[in-house]
Length: 76
Figure 1 (cartoon, helix red, strand yellow):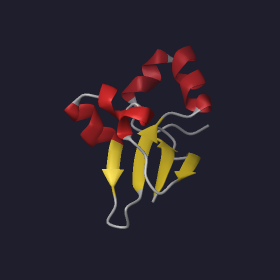
Figure 2 (tube, rainbow, N blue to C red):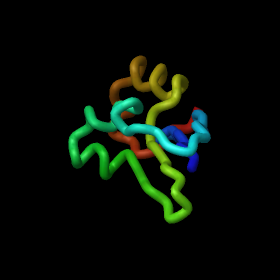
Figure 3 (cartoon, rainbow, N blue to C red):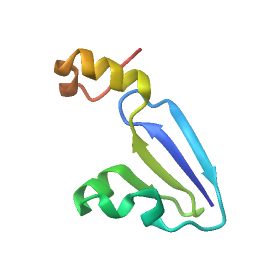
Figure 4 (cartoon, rainbow, N blue to C red):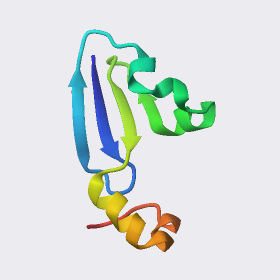
């Protein structure tokens, strides 16, 4: 099983965790609302998990340009 993190704004691969098992509370998933969890986390039939997060570049762009939050996708 692997957990893959991708940026929700630009799609860049942020990183992966390869593990046999992991407790979701160690990843912070238990702090998400049900709505956020369904929006951010996708479970694949292979057992892999894809998590939508935000990369440093997009975070910096959004901090400098709050109007960008209206866009679904950013290019940097």
